[in-house]
Length: 174
Picture 1: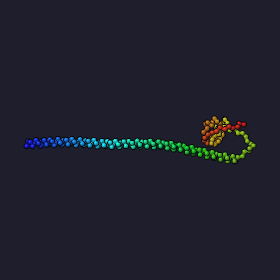
Picture 2: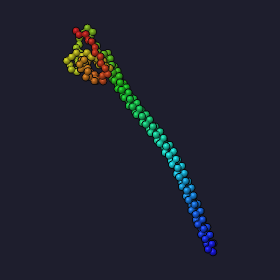
Picture 3: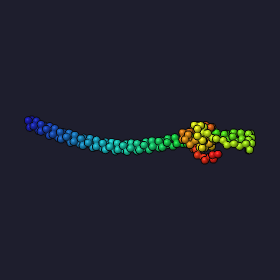
Picture 4: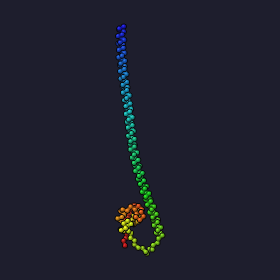
């Protein structure tokens, strides 16, 4: 019986050793499998992060392009608004000049002046009233300011129309 007990103890020890070896092999393979799965997950996540970073760069580039385009369009709108305003002012000035010309024409038709009764007229500057008016204001064409006062005049002192330019005229002095 003692021999049987020794054999049972040896068998138990052998089984225990084999069980320990099997547990170590299973643990080793489980660790290798875990490392493999973690590596695959890290690789997948790295690919996803790289793709997301590329997408973010593309979106930032698009945002910058759209911002530039919006600024360009805003500048164009401002330019066109300014052009419309300038054209509107020009139209108002042209209408005022037309109405003035019509009024002058009607006044000229209704008044009669004897051609033998022509007398020289002195054109005094309407601003300083000291110098001879020798500058024609455009677009109304009034000869009403001297050269010195023309530099500061923004509009015609006779009709109030906004001055676009002026021309110095040479008047014969009698």
